[in-house]
Picture 1 (cartoon, protein in one colour):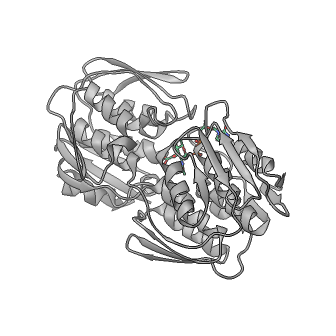
Picture 2 (cartoon, rainbow, N blue to C red):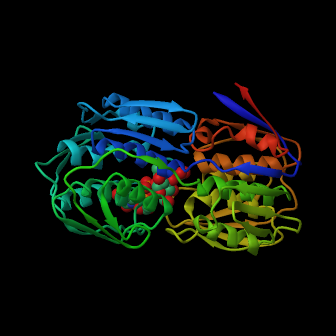
Length: 420
Ligand code: EPU
């Protein structure tokens, strides 16, 4: 297991190119299973989760070649229908093969993902949506066991108690591309990743409209074909590095970042005192004031993303006031809080929110990463803390940020990876 050693105190300065979106790349790679053909997917980030998806596809009989940020996929020939627990437990997003497999083969056995550090994360909406398409689904021995002769289009309301679901919208939309007739998904997730997957599917010959809105309409087609497709930039990576600029009182140009993808984060950064300049080829973030306080409530897109909550909590722990940060998507996504407290932050949890009283400085400490975004928050805190911070269990951060220490070092950070 590796750890990060961070000497805090340097401002981040310079330009960094934003990598492709993890949460687009995963379902797009899974969706190649829909047909028998070749694909070239560009701008794929080289992350642990992408390598896990590669393994899932390979176990199903698909060839996957990674050449830099281009991934060649060949889905010709027979494919299997079982995604085993060993892989799904490593990465929940393995369940993205469920929709494509049931649509192509009429059969899928996908392990249930099990528990997660950030909340219960059920997959009932995925199952509800696929059942509406007339798939027969049961849960047997920890697996989702699905079969169907032919999926049929349907009118589906897909919202759950916490609002729309990115994963369920993508799984059901993907399956519906090959269903007989028209499918309408109401209460669809509007996240840019959903739109990206729909655009990819349309390039493969699907007929999807309304992606990026609450109502998606899919006209089923008989067959899809391969294509070349470029993944959108990762809005959460962009947001994390933007917070990095702000927390370290630096100035960073996020090359390739698209304002419309992370406007709610940029607006919050402005509110706490950062300057944001939107250019044609990216977004600049500069902080030369004291960090102000603000209140945050996470919400589905275009609201403030849950995936940026931990990073902003780290930032607000250095503000000049009191902030309330409320988590409305994943009830347990507060594992970073006690680690930040170990670094001198003054944060108190009250149910689904935390009260963050700004302190003048954080100090280095040994801390433990618990999930992907929590570990990003600890790295950001370490950049601004006085003294040395050691972040353990950084395999979490490798799931979602490519080569983060090297890219932060290029911006002036003092951060090194060490083997335990
Ligand atoms: N939900 C249900 N039933 C379901 C599915 C979801 O009740 O069948 C609930 C969830 O428990 C949650 C809410 O609906 O309260 C929204 O969850 P969603 O399904 O949208 O999340 P997801 O698809 O499992 C994706 C991202 C997450 C991101 C969320 C929310 C991927 C691979 N994961 O998860 O990303 O936090 O959307 O935007 O796309 C991350 O990258 O660190 C990460 C956790």
